[in-house]
Image (cartoon, rainbow, N blue to C red; front, top):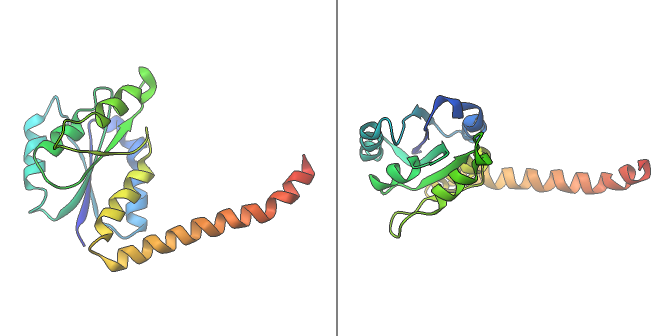
Length: 165
């Protein structure tokens, strides 16, 4: 199975990306976590991206806040799918990162999840990898079934909760 990479613009993004690491591990996907800045270490971003395919990666999650150019820089140097994970910050609560990540020029797309939505980034990464991995696809099908069962159970129990109101 191909690996997933999670690239953070800063180590301060670790609490935001931690759920993605956990989700990828639960699905049995090997992942690498790196701190690479689009602005402070652009050569490292380019080097990582250019060698990602030969290093066994199948998808890259780029987590960044504020100007959030990391996903775009990564995508500029690879044809692998890049998933942008906009991170909230003290200024604008992540809306700036969301817009920076979503607004890519034609021909260099980035799939973008919600602000701080690391688990969704990991699930999307898994879905991309599962296109060529039936075992991983089965895990995703099972995960969806568990979610549906959980909602059904909550639906069954809601009448009891209604009586308590």
